[in-house]
Image (cartoon, rainbow, N blue to C red):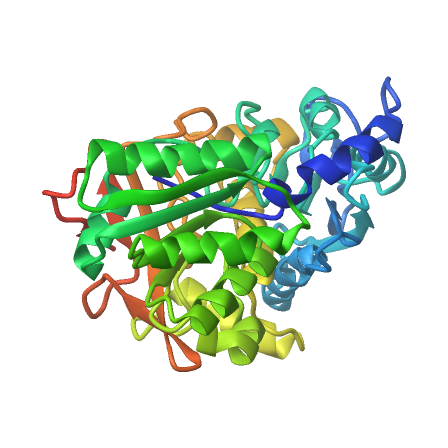
Length: 424
């Protein structure tokens, strides 16, 4: 089961008012069109450049660096352009627009009207992806961090991990709890639809595969009000909880970790979005033994695939710090490049989209857990799902659950705790 707990779960309620005040223009734009014809006639393509841009929630309530996807995109472009670009053209990132959480549709329209782009790359919207309709209508190849429901469906949308499976039931979490020897689970979530759905999926998974028992469950918590932490942790202590799973933001899991340490609760957390090295340096004492799930090869991997080596090399050469967000930008740019290469020198928007949708194993040269674009626009539980796992030990992330020389543990759609993962 793929569960990527992201800030959208925390800020959805905050964004409603902002979204209701946003405006969206209808009609065509100078950069629209189906993308038929030839490369020379394509929006955003000149004789020596291929222009792209993005929209991210740069200004956001959590002060999270979602705009950093641009750095990953630019580092990948630097690598490609250093080797002469593609088809004699340089890849160019024109601008990262800030939707400020509630103005996505407006900023997407501005990008289409003003930037003259071939593709949208490095999209990272933490509330409703309201500009998705515009990008789908104009058949713009779109690459981004797919944490919104709008990413599923359109054939011109390519997220970093395929369709999300928020709330799906599976045997992988019960399997990993079993491997860790954990028996009593707490599940906490906000009273926001996506967060509740995530929590329900976790509980149903343990109901179906009872390797451990959910003894504390609460999906009624309010974002921004951490008064729940003390009572929730006391419940954990009273019920002997040894594994905590949340569908919440990093601020909340930190508050829980601090309270557990203070109250002497001997439990670890399962952290689906905490692969943050600066955060770990500051707060490692509250997360010892906790497990972090990531959809790309860890930087600490001893079996670095070529894609990871290239990423680390070019992030350094570009003057950027590697992070989860920049990794997604790199993966997005890599998918665009793969599509252009497969489409051929007389590429069009439609040819790039069609080429990617024929690919069954897109993995940024080994950096990412692969995506099968023949099915993953709509298939939320693909036949095989892969992820990397790291354990927090001291102030380091240490790869776990995989043998030496491998990065990803893979589970099938029908995986049960009696099975064993395959590895890649």
